[in-house]
Length: 235
Ligand SMILES: [Zn+2]
Image 1 (tube, rainbow, N blue to C red):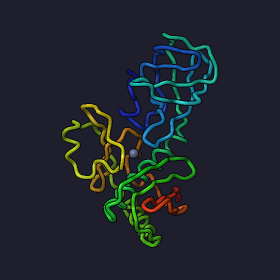
Image 2: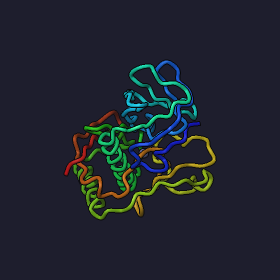
Image 3: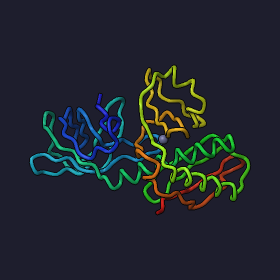
Image 4: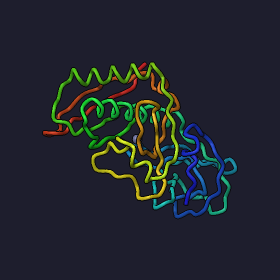
């Protein structure tokens, strides 16, 4: 099992770790702050350093409870002690996008009762799909304005762990239409204080003000009950 350093601190940019195993160019570490693709959040990029030699991390994925780093060349072996550095600019942008998507989902869920049917975070623009019949652009603009008011009020964002049994009693803890959290005893929770509580494994900013501003890119109709919102971040 790979220790997930990004769960201890999403702001950790560098770390040292031991290589557990290497298969071709797939590297397993004993611990990592490289986030593997999951929950709509893309993987981190960056590099592994060994005695001045640099291995670019091209992809990070989950395999059971292990996290695998695909690097650009061979040369690493089990037992090596490496330094890992993530591409922080990319990660921080994705953290802002991720927290912004929770904030929007919370507002739209509260205002309309809609559940989330899909979504994807990206650097330029992110999308959220809602299971919602009505389609009123003015209303969506008002939801974005509300989100920006809340960003200005600057609530804290707190990740923590909770017994699954307890967590499942919290209303609105699951806003995804089809996904139930993994069948484990303990769930990771991300709470935007006073606004939202979600079961979530991803990376988030500490304060809403770090997002600066959410802007609508476009709204799309994707079938009878599916509304797609693309948003980006501005100043
Ligand atoms: Zn999330």
